[in-house]
Image (cartoon, rainbow over the protein chains, first blue to last red):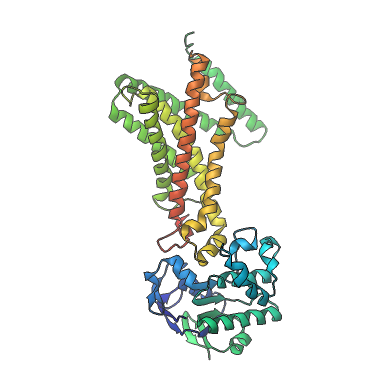
Length: 204
Length: 263
C-alpha cells in the first residue's frame, strides 16, 4: 500500500503541481485536449525532463533508480505499444505468469490462449485491455491511467473499471486517472480535478 | 617485373572515360553529372596531394608529422560519418561519437598490426602506417556510419516501443538492446560480404595494387588476407563502440528516452 504525492511537479506548460493521492485513493484528472493531462502522467512516471519531486509514501522518487520507480508507479499510456511479436513476450518471463495472471485474463475477457496470440492480430480494444494486464503483472503500488477505457465497449469498460477498483482496494494503491468521460468520473467516485489555464483545480 | 610509370597522357585517357560518363548522364537526364565531375575532381586533388605529402613523409619518418596526418584522416572520416546520418546527435556528439569510435578501433588495430603482426621498425614507418590506417579508417567509417544511422533512425521510429519498455520498468539498456543489435548487424554486413566474396567475385583493391606493382600473387594474397581480417576486427570494434556510446547518449541518467538530443 502506498500514497502518491506530487511535490511541485512541473510538466511542460503547467504550473507546479502539489497533489496527494492517499493509499487506496482515486483522483480523476480531466481537461481539454492539449491541456497537458498526458504530460502530467508522463512527468510523474519520470519519462520527460521536468522540475519537481514525487513521493511514494516516504520514498522520494529521486532516491530510487528510475526503472524501479516506474515499476512501482505504473503508467498505462493512452496508446499501448508492443515490442515483440507474441503477447507472452510482454509479460515477466517466469512461471508465475500462467498461474497468477489467469484470473486477471479471465476478468478481462481472455482465455489462457491469449498469451500465444500474435500482437498484430489484436484489435485496439484488446490491446488496451492486455496493456492493463501487462501493467498489473508488475504489481505496481500506484497507478497512472491515461484514458484507460477510451477504446472499449460498455461491457469491457465495466470490466476494466471493476479490475482497477478491486486492485486499488486490494493493494491500497493510489490511482491517478486521466479520463475525458464525465459519466465515468461520477460513477467511480473519488476526487475530481480539472486542468484549467495550466492549473490543476477541483472540478466544479 | 618492374613498375610501369603512368604519364599524364595515360591518366588523361582514364579521365576521359569519366567525362564520357558525365556526358552520358547529361544526355540521359540522370542528373548526376555535376556530382560525378566534382567527385572526380576531388579525388584527383586529394590523391595527388596525398602522394606529395607521403613523399615528404617517407623521406623524413617524423612522428609528429605522421601523427598530424593521421589526425586529419580521422577528422575527415568523422565528418563523413556525421554527414551520412539522417538524424544526427546534437552538438559535439554528432562528430564525437563516430570519431571516437573510429579512433578506438582503427588506431588500436593498426598499432597492433604494425607492432605485433608485421613488426615494422620503427613502428611508425609511414610506408606501412598510412596505407594500413587509411584502409582501416575507410572501411570502419562505412561500418560505423551504417550502424549509427540505423541506431538513430530505428530509435526515432520505435519511440513508442522503447518507452513502453521503460514504462514497464526496463532500464535503458534493456529498452534499446534489440535495436542496437540490429544496427550493429547492418554495420557489419558489408565487411562480411566482402570477406565472403573476396577472390571470387571481387579482386580486392590492395591485392590488385600489389600485383600491379610487381609482387608475387601469393604474397599479395597473404597481405590482402591480413588486411581483410584487420578490417573486420576494426569495423566490429568501431561499430560496437559507436552503437554503445550512441545508444547510451539517447538516454539520460533517469533512463528517459531523449530523442531531443537528435536533430
